[in-house]
Image (cartoon, rainbow, N blue to C red; front, top):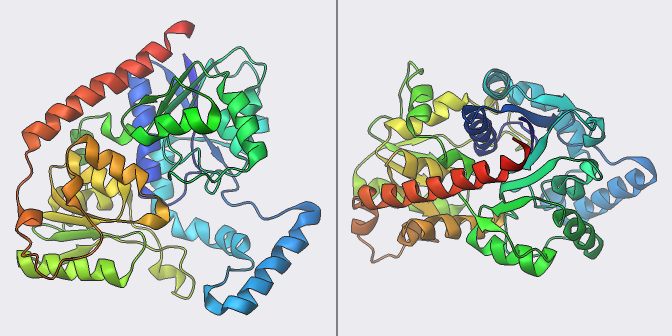
Length: 380
């Protein structure tokens, strides 16, 4: 079957790249021809009559808030810098994902694909997916195709849709043949927000393949600086997270290796913001003793690689996905929002019952792969 995958734009986000790779890999393993659709313009600038007002509004907020205000011409800087920042991640995309680049979803024509799969990542979050209606396959309206959502995520439990968007997306979702979501709470959100009561909770695509596929990427690296150390992977740095890292250093007696990247932070030289290869990131997970992260996929890789880990709450990017993931495996106590001065670190240093975790993972894999196979049967 010819399948097109609709996901967030592929740029420098490790988790976003890995979930696209994993879903493509699994579908191809089932014998399908898979194309990941990717937009040429990752961050389009405001257009038309609204553009001057958009820029003027940013300028005014910048004047009021200073450096904490919005960057006025962020899209232009992003477009200029991305080819450099994504030097290594683009290589991974070209080699292992090989997406079809399109100007917009209107470029996709009827008859090119038999099925469209939306997912995973925060593809149903309007803040991240511009033109959210296309994340519900508006561009396929009237076509005789399968429409499937696999592990689609709202990213947050707070409603970010405008009323008109909710109405339109609800109508579009009614045409889907099968719907699954990445967070347990999203099952209820589909029903409450979009009037859809048939959503199923499944695994993030990164967890569908065996961990050996990620270890094989890691083994391709010549240098292994994270070996025997604490790996830190922080998306949004803060003093609180710094204190957690320092605490883990103190109670474990181990040094740290920082895999964090902040490519879009203005003010640092461009050469210092180039995102290292995906393979190098995976090697750090494979080699380290402990992981400290505020990233959803950082927690996912920790579980797959059987690493003791500390998840630091990251409300900015949405807590529902992290809470859902940890509760699935009974690992809620690995989540911290700070450090208790009286904590000796014994629990966070303790071993995890990986036999129990793997049993849950196997059960959820079978359920998730079964969802995909059953959803694609109609067109076979």
